[in-house]
Image (tube, rainbow, N blue to C red; front, top):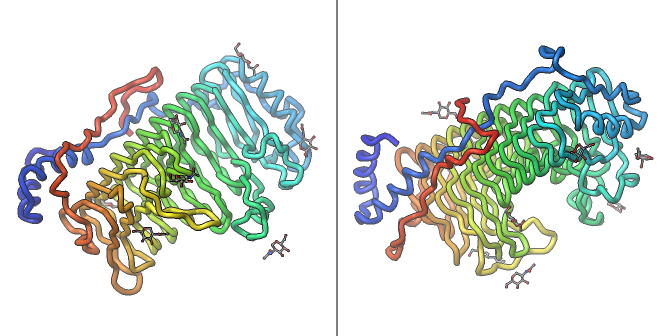
Length: 459
Ligand SMILES: *[C@@H]1O[C@H](CO)[C@@H](O)[C@H](O)[C@H]1NC(C)=O
Ligand SMILES: *[C@@H]1O[C@H](CO)[C@@H](O)[C@H](O)[C@H]1NC(C)=O
Ligand SMILES: *[C@@H]1O[C@H](CO)[C@@H](O)[C@H](O)[C@H]1NC(C)=O
Ligand SMILES: *[C@@H]1O[C@H](CO)[C@@H](O)[C@H](O)[C@H]1NC(C)=O
Ligand SMILES: *[C@@H]1O[C@H](CO)[C@@H](O)[C@H](O)[C@H]1NC(C)=O
Ligand SMILES: *[C@@H]1O[C@H](CO)[C@@H](O)[C@H](O)[C@H]1NC(C)=O
Ligand SMILES: *[C@@H]1O[C@H](CO)[C@@H](O)[C@H](O)[C@H]1NC(C)=O
C-alpha cells in the first residue's frame, strides 16, 4: 500500500473512530496485509498450445479411431477408455473429441500418472446417460473423473453435458419424499498439479458441475458453466483441498453456488467472473458435523452478480473448528441480489434444524472494497457471527448497496470491524476493537513459494 495513503488513512481512523493508538497500529498492520493479499498467478504464461497450429509435432488420438460412434445414442465408453490408455503414455499426444458430434459416455475414471502436458481437446459434446437407475453404483458421485494427471490441459469449444434432469427430479430438495443422497459431479480433476482448463462448457450436471480437488497450481479461464437456476446442488466450480488456483473470465449460471471454496484451500484468485442465476460466490460451507475447515487467502477481483440469492458469502456450520482468514473482495457489481454481502455462521442446509453450539469456524480479516449495486432484500449486509467466536477485522471501503425498492440496512451479530470511505448502508452495528484485543493480528504473507510449474506472470 502507498505510504501517503497509509498516513492519511491513519488520521482518518483516529478522527473517524476516536480509537486508541494501539488499536490503530494493530489495525494498520492487518489492513496492509489485507490490502496487499496477493495470489501467485503462476503457470508459465497461459499460452495453451493449440494442437491445430502445431499439428506436425502432435500425435492425435481421436476417439473416433477407437470406435466411438458419436450419435448421442451409442455407448462410446469403451472407445474413450481405450483412447485414454493410448494417449496417457504417448508423448505430445492430443486426446481429441471431434466437433459436431455427441458422444455418450458412462461414469469413467481417467487415471494417471500419464506423460506431462497431455492435451484433452474437447470440440464435440460428451453426454452422460440420463437414467439414474442404470448408473454404476460404484461411481455414485462421479461421471468424468481425472486423477493424477500433472500438467494436463483441457481446451476446446466443446461441451460436457451431465443430462441431469432425472437426477434433479429425484433430489430430496425437489421432493421431500425422495431420499437425500448424492449425485455425480460432471467433471472432476483430482490430485493433479499444473492443470489448465480453457474454453470448455460444462452444463446440466447431475450435481456439482466442476470440482477441483487436491490439486495445486490450476488455471481455469474462459469456461462456461450452465445449469438451470432451479437444479438442486449444482455448484458451478467447487474448489476443495486445493492451492494456487486462478479462475478467470468465466460465466457461471447454476442452481447452487457459482463458486464454492471449501476446506484445505488457499491462494485462490478469481478475476472477471459473471455469476447468475445461482447462490453467489461462496466460501464454505465449512465446519459441518463438527469438522475442521480452513480457507485462507482468497481474492475476488471484478465480478458481476445478477439476480443471485447471495452475493459474497461465507457460510459455516455451528460446532465447526478451523478458520477463514485473509479474504479480499473488490470491484464487484450486484444487480438485484438477495443477500449481497453475507457472513452466516449459523448455516444449516439440513432437513433437521441445527442446534447452536459453542464451537465455530473463526472468521477474520475479511475486506470488501468497491462493492456496489442493488439489494433485493432490506438487509443488504449481514454479519451473522457466532456468539462465542465473534467475527473480527471485517473491513469495508467504498461499498454502496441500494435497495431495489426502499431502504437497506446492515445486520450484525457478534461482528467486529470498521469501514472507511463511503460505506452504505451504515455499519454502525459492527463493534470496534475490543479493549482486550492485545495480540497482533496474524500476518497474511504473500506466498513466494514456487513449485516447478509456477513462474511469475502478470495477467
Ligand atoms: C502410464 O505409464 C505409467 C508409468 O509407467 C503407469 O504407471 C501408468 O499405469 C500408465 N498409464 C496407462 C493408462 O497406461
Ligand atoms: C454403460 O452403462 C450402460 C447402462 O448401465 C450399460 O448397459 C453399459 O454396459 C455400460 N457400458 C460399459 C462399457 O460398461
Ligand atoms: C414426490 O414423490 C412422491 C413419491 O415418489 C410422488 O408420489 C409425488 O407425486 C411427488 N411429488 C411431486 C410434487 O412431484
Ligand atoms: C481439510 O483439509 C485438510 C488439508 O487438505 C485435510 O487434511 C483434512 O482432512 C480436511 N478435513 C476435512 C474435514 O475434510
Ligand atoms: C458435535 O459436538 C456437539 C457438542 O460437543 C455434540 O453434541 C454433537 O453430537 C456433535 N455432532 C456430531 C455430528 O458429531
Ligand atoms: C469499482 O468496481 C467497478 C466494477 O464494479 C469498476 O468498474 C470500477 O472501475 C471500480 N472502481 C475503482 C476505483 O477501481
Ligand atoms: C443461535 O444463535 C443466534 C445468535 O445468537 C440466534 O439468533 C439464533 O436464534 C440461535 N438459534 C438457535 C436454534 O438457538
